[in-house]
Length: 194
Image (cartoon, rainbow, N blue to C red; front, side, top):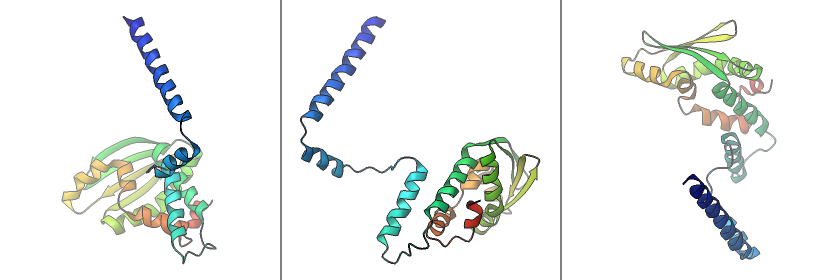
């Protein structure tokens, strides 16, 4: 039985490949180029590449763009930082406390340590402006203790549910920050180019 299933799968795969090959070889150059231009894709690759591509498209479409101020590399460096603080950090604990949550996070690489250092210098103030939440950051050796609280009792569960990465991603300021950075208006650009 197993052999029959494997044989069927191999024949099916070979048949599909042969059909696709035959179908593609029958296409003219004109047909191929028409298909490529008619295809509507929404992803440019990974998320950082897509963000950069979106920024470039918007800069390109604005005739008032001052290209002498544009700094796509600053944006790329910031997106690397965001990737590091998302994927290369160990969340050691997330504990409910009165009025919010405490998280202990530890960077796993030198780059994620530098990224956390940069991001945690500016994120608490931004989070408070956008949500009213208070974020305290205490560095203990190679880990960070983050205490996030609110005076609004209805938002305590939200903070706890969001946890470390949800609180870091919360709000819409990231898009505005990325745009300002790429277009040369970012006041924190020096932090991301170290």
